[in-house]
Length: 295
Image 1 (cartoon, rainbow, N blue to C red):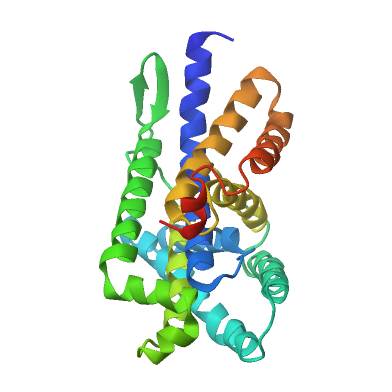
Image 2 (cartoon, rainbow, N blue to C red):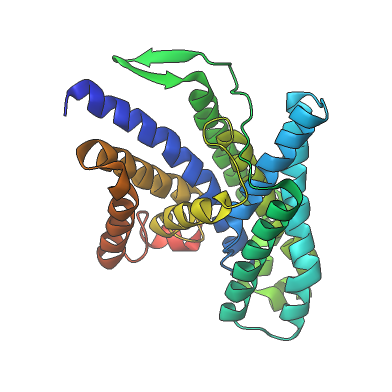
């Protein structure tokens, strides 16, 4: 493996890593605010990407507006899940495994709905910055990938400030940690949970919109993105959105180097094997105990 080829693989891994990170961030947001593992986080990405594609390509909506519509579709999907399903199950004191099964079922339902209404075709959005590329130490990276990385970093910074500086963010965290105590202090726990699902859905949809110019979006992409995002969130500490970034980068670069050193067919095996090994020796994630407490 030449140094240029290795560096090209690393750049590709960084790009993919930030995609996985965005999915993992949305998953971590929902877990942080509800203690529910959302197995349909990738479907939020699929919904956001598909809505943006149809708004932009089939209805002539400006690109920025179409992207905003995709993010709103993700947030709206999260709100509907909470209102239609989670609230009723919470009222009946459902266990964690019940919520996991709920989101798995909803993931298959969302994929089937997209298949029914949209079909089997795959869709792409135009790249931000067009087809331009930049040279970095002899390797090349699409301009869109740089935008994706910058937007992901901004999302992480904004989420950090949101959870530590804003009243709503602090209320969402309090409602998750101690619902009864939060309610005693006047916090609307049900509303905070809805906000959490909306935020997780919006972040997931944004990830889908940003990845659709790089990877064609179709009805079965959700499960793939969910698995990679879940791996990123687990490695970083499931309740820590910041940790998902580190986890996503580890997964992305492991995949990229496996493609160069072994074969593209082994990239998933290499990434998941690394996750298993790391979780044996670092069960609290890459950031240790702070990863579990959240960022």
